[in-house]
Image 1 (cartoon, rainbow, N blue to C red):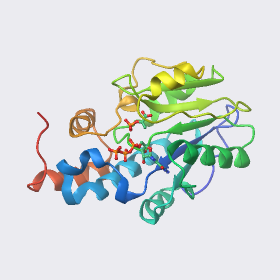
Image 2: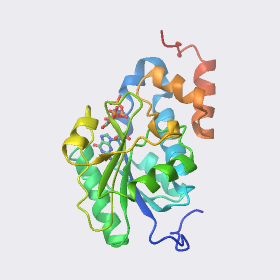
Image 3: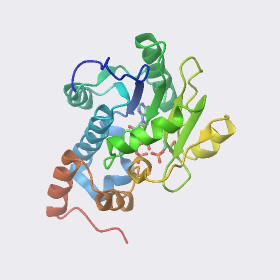
Length: 227
Ligand SMILES: Nc1nc2c(ncn2[C@@H]2O[C@H](COP(=O)(O)OP(=O)(O)OP(=O)(O)O)[C@@H](O)[C@H]2O)c(=O)[nH]1
Ligand SMILES: C=C(OP(=O)(O)O)C(=O)O
């Protein structure tokens, strides 16, 4: 479904998912050497595949993208995301701003923050994580390396306090959020920051936009298989 909110979820209000998207000049710097002129296109493609999978999840009522960059803003709005400006005060401030918009739009619904770099994300796997998250006031999904976080969520009415950035798994645990590691959600934990991460995501199967950019990248002389 595109461009409008879902009102027929039948299981109480659906989740509002907030996705932060950095301005492209600063995005995916750890992929810069391996992707050269394809870096920005890859960042947009990865964000589009992530948001598209989130919008296709039956437990998701809407996706709010927080970005200050008109290029991803336009591409993600075309997919059906609700785009709001970045307050320009870092990742967690961007997420809190999206969280406030979520509560304004759906005061009785749960709110989640989802990283924009999950190009292999499967809607059903996001659904598994959201079903687990519904049992806890605050919860999060660690990345595959168990250092960072790919998702943080709160039940309706609970303060939304994302603590992303670097070693955020420990900060989310320290903030009292329940760690969620149900079986069968590899696509939800596969964030892409490095060439090796990208290879892992490709092995799981990425969305069509990422696949298209990676095909062009691999045909160019830029890409080097990670050692
Ligand atoms: N809106 C917004 N999103 C951010 C900001 N900083 C990071 N993000 C997003 O948060 C997620 C994690 O970002 P990072 O890992 O810090 O940055 P990245 O661009 O993915 O990769 P690197 O440049 O290699 O660090 C990605 O979805 C980014 O787009 C910010 O200040 N504003
Ligand atoms: C921002 C984070 O991750 P990364 O920098 O690995 O994308 C995080 O895990 O909190």
